[in-house]
Amino acid sequence: MPAIEGKPAQPVANKDGEFVFPPVTREHILHCSYDYWFPKYRTSCIRSEIIPLTPDFVSYIHEDGIILADEGSSNSNQEEDEDDDWEPTNPSSDFPPPPRDPRDESDSSDDEDEATSSRLPPNQRFPDLHNKIETTIQQLGGSVAPKLNWSSPRDATWISRHPNTIKCTSANDIYILLKSSSFISHDLDHAFDDTVTVQNPSPPFQPVLVLRSYFNILPSLEFRCFVKDRNLVAITQRDPNYYPFLRSLRPHIISRIKELFTKRLKFTFPEADFIFDVYIPEASYDDEVNRLGRARLIDINPWAPRTDPILFGWDELLEINVKRPVIGGPLPTQEEDGSEEEESESDEEEGEEEDQPELRLVEKDDPAAYNFSSPAFSAHKLPKDVVDASQAGEGGMREFAESWRDFTRERERRQQGQSERQGGQQQGQVEEIQEVQERGAGST
Ligand SMILES: Nc1ncnc2c1ncn2[C@@H]1O[C@H](COP(=O)(O)OP(=O)(O)OP(=O)(O)O)[C@@H](O)[C@H]1O
Ligand SMILES: [Mg+2]
Image 1 (spheres, rainbow, N blue to C red):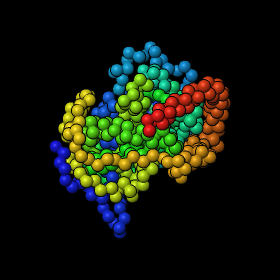
Image 2 (cartoon, protein in one colour):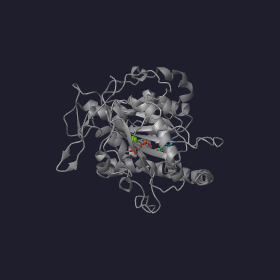
Image 3 (cartoon, rainbow, N blue to C red):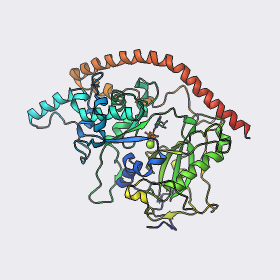
Image 4 (cartoon, rainbow, N blue to C red):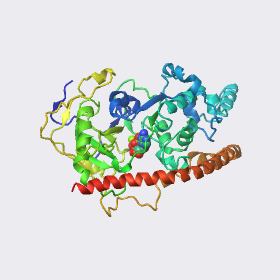
């Protein structure tokens, strides 16, 4: 159906003089799931693989204790050529129920099987999935940034053996992060809270693990972009630090994001209101004209209170009056068939007048700027396991304490070696930022 200009399809309700959110649908949330949109926009994204998760894996994430795979358990090298045909054992399953309440009446032999299974390490408990994860990490270059359908374990990076990053080089790295993250639990248990369902029957939810090839991202060049009535209305810096060099890059940032939005997303994403995140890598040093490279699509987030508007307020965003709203469904394109889309010229006439999105950057002495004395996600600093185990009686606590002690010893040993190696690497990144900064200052 062609897009039609006119009134917004879903005007924001105004209740007691206050702007309130339009109802968020289950379908909207599902359209923002990585496995829904990644195949459409693959060529604008970071190289990624999507692995459907089995109910057993989801139970493992939910359980107390951190039972890891045996060292060297992967037979990734021998099984590499079987990869293409890999299928999840239960691909059509909906989200499995949380662990059973022990007070429920149930078949005792089933309970025993389940208990035995939950004590097995991942390489024995779900060997196909475990091997698939190990081989995929290797295929993506040896290090990956994991996430589930919507969220990455950003709140658990403090526990990682790659300090303060979501970088993972083994399946065990991934298990530790996923099991320690409240954001991941939210994806599994609360993704559809406060939503309404339009379709009947309501579309199913398949939990997936997304592995993205890991690279050293410059947080200063990450942006969050707001789309309302198929118009790019606002852009905010994602990292809460002040970067002086961004000021001179303003026009380049806006033009790179508009390019991605207009060519790829504007008429093809099924929702008229949504939020997307981008990373704009630097252009090669010999490219004087294009100071920034093509914007890469990192994520698509729901137009819903759960998405952090960062330097904007939701009240501001809801109040923005779009002059040329586009209503109607997405244009049918090649992508809708699931086939890969090639870069194409914009449907929009060059030079056609349109509103400029507001780009908001952290300013010097901005109160919104990051306070280095308070660590991010401090409320999430204890892994869910610690809290759960402390409430699970003596047995749960003992099991947890044993694996926790082994894990922390190993982590300390590795971190020591890692931080010695990383000293040199971080210096390199600071120099890179300074170089961009100097080039920025030269152009003003
Ligand atoms: N491939 C990658 N390599 C390195 N770092 C990455 C990669 N992908 C993402 N990151 C980092 O991880 C952060 C979080 O990723 P992402 O936006 O996908 O998570 P999220 O949970 O959806 O975040 P939010 O809750 O803000 O929407 C990014 O801001 C980026 O800094
Ligand atoms: Mg996100």
